[in-house]
Length: 412
Image (cartoon, rainbow, N blue to C red; front, side):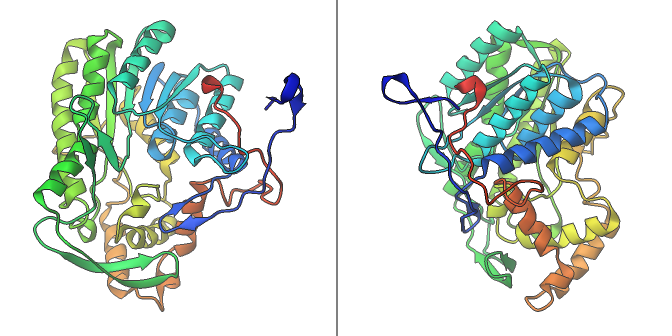
């Protein structure tokens, strides 16, 4: 990074030693080199499995900087050879503090895409806004003409409605009555109980406004009206169902109500895209450690138990294995979507296998603070959490200074 000081003379890029600083369910620092390694590891996995036949060639990913959205962009680019556009809301670093993990992930992705001769352009801002939608539409017209794949993978705690200006905030609450169950305190490895009070009607409505399907519809409507959706376009949004132990806080709670609205949007979009020979899908994915899931009570304990069982069985997948399988086996080429009775793609199928769920259920009934490390993969959970922020990756020198102010090439 060439920084210019007084009189245009080059100055030394700011560097620092970056360590993880964890506050609750978030890490307030991110490691540029570690995030880059996390991205290149995902790219290597996709490449190791060979090209994805029949995949899209021009893909827009809304929510592309972390988790399933990032892995979707990687699968599209390095599996399908697609030109990609990504939309996210992240913060760059400076000489005093690190940027967000999503910023560094996106910088690394673009660098690798450019090295591979793949088009990649990113947009940083409010994906819920009309202004961002129009900016992306103008860029598609100028650079790509049309897109044949649209991935919707936004996970945000709040949303400003683009038409009314009203600010909505999502919450994680049960509906109808309070909910008490086991919970893993990840800071001290104590299995305790958590009680969550029920949501109000306003809580439910606000969560649906943030996490439901309205914005996905708005994106596809705007893209279609602008004529930038190609014939045969596929769009997919992501969801989760999980086992009964998590239903009060997830499937039957405020988030689950929002996901029902996402499925409503899928049916509406399916109808709208039919004239283009296109298709809308909701993909139900596996429980994994993401920045969103780590904030949900009860879920970290379930994930830790699940990891233990699935790793022993040899069926554990992270986000990149999930997205590679979704693209390779369900969405494109000679793939079979294998929809369930509600028309959803289920790449949580290995998680929900009867023997897996039986083993997790048995462990759930037994687990406490004393036997936690025997029954649950706590180390795996913590390792996955730290990797989200670029820590704990092999062949990264965390004792060395690194530049926190690296830029995303297309945003520089």
